[in-house]
Image (cartoon, rainbow, N blue to C red; front, side, top):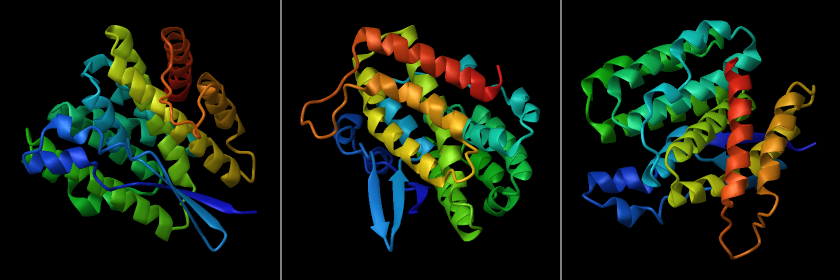
Length: 275
């Protein structure tokens, strides 16, 4: 059986790089849609998917505004005792941290970093955060979105390297699943607050990412450990049934489909964080 490893891309989206060079947001939107790259080497397939930071930035450029009470409360961190819940919620808190960074909520970003450190201790990944001096770097760059973006990307790269070196590459798919669920939740909730056609387009594009995510989890699930998660994600994927990745036409969910998607994403997210 082919072993699939999902790698979460740590490359910054073009938007961040062009901000630093004086580029405008409008100039970058068409350049930063990094959806998926699949690389097959020696009978191994690597799925390279966007990081939580990349998806957050794509959504932000489409109008993902900040609503403070949407993120997973940091007080929930002590409720995650199984490795499965810890991996999923490491991803969720990573997405929340990215959401805060993208919206210049520096203190909230630092709070979520502390929360990620607590989860990393349970997952034996503490060395990643300690070795990078992330708290000091975040505090030293208060108000500097570009620097905070680079710090988040550096964290992602370090985590990917750590998982690979310790034979835990499959863990990345579960962490990414949590991050993807949270980002979709933030997207649908912001859209519920104020309908945004650009944001709906970004939500619709997630069909490609979700299909690859499900495939990667399935091919790494030798012990049927993630069957429930797969079922839950396939339920979400059913909303994208009309999508055809061979078509040149842009696929955009209808208003009715967005409402139904929002309901199912909200239910899955509540289940994932333990509400």
